[in-house]
Length: 96
Image (cartoon, rainbow, N blue to C red; front, side, top):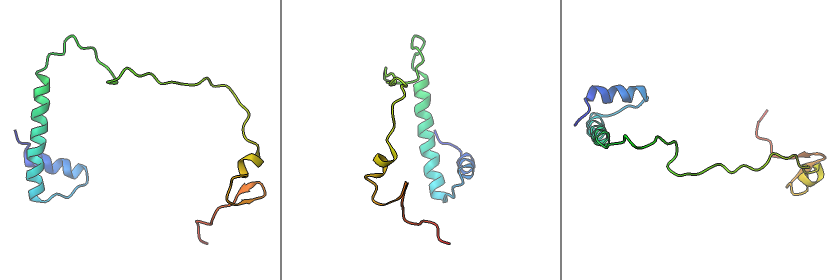
C-alpha cells in the first residue's frame, strides 16, 4: 500500500515541512506501510477486551495534604551562593 504523493505533500505543508521529491517518495511508502500495519490490527478480535487508559495497573500515590511549617528565610538563604539581605542574589541576565 502506498499513500498518494499529494497526501504526503499536504501533510508536509500542514506540518510546515519542506520535502524533496525523494523524501516524498520515501514517506509515501513508509506511511503506506504504517497504515497497512494498522489495517492488520483491525483484523484482531477485540469483542471481549475492555478498553483501558494504561497498559499497567498503576495508581497514583498521593500523600495527604497536611500543612507543615515551611523553611524560615534564614534557612532558605543559608546555602545560597550569594544573598543580599533577605533575597537571593543572582547575576544580571537583562542588559540595560
